[in-house]
Every structure is written in C-alpha cells, then in structure tokens.
Length: 407
Ligand SMILES: C[S@@+](CC[C@H](N)C(=O)[O-])C[C@H]1O[C@@H](n2cnc3c(N)ncnc32)[C@H](O)[C@@H]1O
Ligand code: SF4
Image (tube, rainbow, N blue to C red):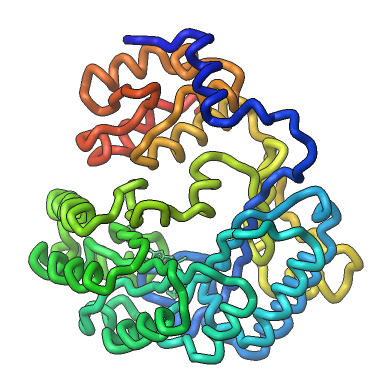
C-alpha cells in the first residue's frame, strides 16, 4: 500500500488552506439545526421525533424554542454558516412563528453573509405568503418532501399530498425566486417496480431541482410499516431489487447532470448541501429544539425529547438549557464516527484531513483492515483519499464494521 510521507501530508494540508489555523480575526464557524416536531399527520413509515398537528401546542413550543435560543450564553463566540430547519414539518409554522425564531437567532448569534439556510417543507403545507416570508427572512434553500409522485404510493405512505400538490408547489417555489431546491424521494416501497421507479426518476429530473435525496425505505421499529412488513413481507422489494433501484437512480441522475456525492444524495455541481456536509465531516454544530443534538468541543449534547417538559421548562426557568445528556467522546469514538460518516461521501476521506483532525495518520490506525478491504475491492485508495467502491456501497454496513474501534 502506498503511504503519504509527513511532508506530502503537510503540503496537502497547506493546499486545503489549513495554514490559517491560528487566524483569530474571524469567529469560528458553526452549523445550526432547529427542530420543529409537528406534522399535519404522522406518516406510516416515519420514526422521526414528530407529533400530529396540535395547534394549541405549537405557539407554546415556538415560545420555548425562542427562549432556548436567546439564553444560549456562548452565542457571541460563533458565526453561523449554515442553518437547517428540520422536522417534523417546519412549513407548518405560521409566518409570524418563523419570523419570531429568526429574530431569536439573529439576536443571539451572528449569521455569516451567504450562509446556507434550508427549510424542510411538505407539499400541501406551503402558501404564497409563507414562501414570500421565507425569502424575506433569508432562507435560500427549500427541501421539499416529495417521496413519490404516484398517488397510490402516497396514500399508502400516509402522506397528506398528491402529485398535483408537488408540481404546483414546486412551481410556486421557483416563481418566488428560489434557486436552490432539494426534492426528497423514496424507493424500495411496497409493490414498487423498477419500471415505475425509472418513470419517477424521469419526472423528478424533468423538474430540474438543484439537489435530489433518494432514500431507500427503512422499515422502522414501532411504525405501522413494521406491522405491514410482518403481515405481508412479500409486497416489499427484496434486497436485490432495492440495490437495482439504487444503481438505477445513480445511472439516471448522473446522466441528467447530478453529481452522486453521498450514498443517498445527488447535486448539480456546487449545490451539495453544506449543512449535511458538516455532519459528515464532524464539524461543530448546535441544535435547538426538542430532541436536537449538538456536537462541539468533542462532546455530544442531546436535548430532552419530552414535549410537555420542554415547554414547561421554558415557563419555569430563567436560562433554558434543556440538555438531557452530555457524552464526552473518546478519540476512538470520534475516529469511528469520522470514518462512518466520511465514507458515506463518495469523494471519501481525505487522509490529510484525518491527520489534521486526529494528529495521527489514518493508516497507522486502520492498517490491516484497510489492506484487507482494499484487497477485497470494497475500499479504494486514490489521490490520498479512502473511499467505498461500488461493491463497497452495496454492502456498506459490512464494510463500515471494519472501522469500529470500540465495542
Ligand atoms: C426528517 S424527514 C422530514 C421531511 C418532511 N417532513 C417530509 O416528510 O416531507 C426527511 C426525509 O427522510 C426520509 N425518510 C423519513 N423516514 C424514512 C424511512 N423510514 N426510510 C427512508 N427514508 C425516510 C423522507 O424522504 C423525508 O423526506
Ligand atoms: S411529514 Fe415527514 S417528519 Fe412528518 S411524519 Fe411524515 S416523514 Fe415524518
């Protein structure tokens, strides 16, 4: 196996701009996640932290969330370079509620010029007024949860929208001037065929969004889909068909000009999601809202996930911390996470970046395992990067298990 010398690694670091590490004139950059745990109706396959729409609770929740943001005492130390409103369904919020949250953010933390500000929206929940307010507040990326454009599939998924809603709301977002739109789509759905998936991919690419996330269905524990699977496993595509759907997406989307940059993500060049890249690269982020996680100073903080407790804490304490647990990460744990997340990126892991992050070389940590995975053509090593091969992508969980350092 070829190894980089220390000099080569230092040169690579220099090329990547790491010479400015001691420049204290700029505040360090941070990504911010805001969780909105309400949906009009819970979908049959979803286990995200979200509840059926409760008008009475949303106002109280937004108030608590704003308080949590405003009482964050280290806001002055950072500059936020990406913000992501996720859920749940952030587009359920009224223009006033979303405006209040932005006010709390801007009062607390500096938002850098040109920051990527994304908002997850559900077809069927957007209005012209909401989209205008998003633009005025500085939101510049909309992620629309399309999932499917087949009416029967949408019904079975438990979605509130139909195909017409998708097209109308997509057009509206464009007309209102958004130039960075992501569409979430899903494959591996009950009774889905390869032909039908191909047609969906054609319709989605014809819309010409800047970004597409194509997720293989995961049958999550405790969801109605788990019960459906137990009762009728044969209606779900088998592993072979699911892999074929994944590679069909790769073929059609790359042919249409998208870069396949992460296992489930495709982007027009330059439109890769900066926010998600911070997770994949283990860059610090802060999460506000119910159940949100933060990662900074090598620690992971998880917020409480009990809605009533979260709201009542805002009413009863002067500084709202709402942290449920703090886990200090060991260097081994961080290396594992770095490998697990970084290998999801098709560009792979930059060996110089590993050295910069951990102060030791990747090969010194994973020597024998790397040799084995390369020999089995599951990992390739080129341009000072370690990345999954197409065969490795198919069995990524197995490959990633070779990067575990703790039990
Ligand atoms: C956090 S969800 C919320 C987005 C938005 N509320 C919506 O559903 O339109 C983000 C995406 O995860 C995907 N997703 C959710 N549950 C999934 C599952 N069980 N398997 C695969 N993908 C899933 C869906 O594509 C969804 O759009
Ligand atoms: S709308 Fe999105 S977050 Fe809400 S239940 Fe459905 S998939 Fe989950």
